[in-house]
Image (tube, rainbow, N blue to C red; front, side, top):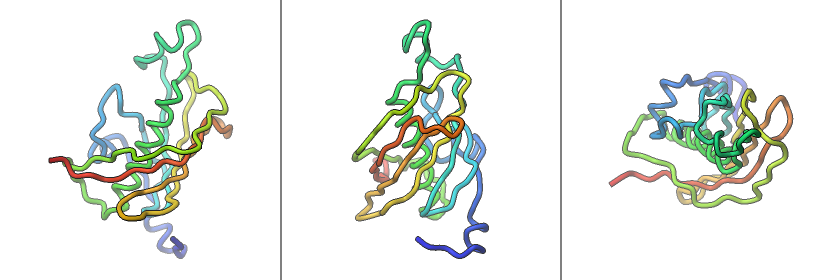
Length: 159
């Protein structure tokens, strides 16, 4: 979706953890987005996840060599993409709405993510067809690609 500069700068906004929690139903230890630094509805999001040794997965993954599991990196990227989908729908908080995965393609892991790292997560809308969102997602640490994939999801109302 093309936008002019005035529209782009007017919609480019971040979110703190309080606002993130209004949109995502996840809570500790499964809320994996700490801050949104850029969000352009229907286009892209840039979000951050600070990796801490205090996270519950590290005692078992792996003892004496903590590494963030790839599945959690994909989940963190999906949560960021979910925020983009929610905010693209008119900026309305709806606690009875969730995002479900419908597909993950081409997931690749290029470098380990360890405590002390900051995972920069980017999601870009590729298309929205019949309620299915497709995103290109990428996680980086200090400019190096840690993981990338294409994710598909849909927004659903809870019964």
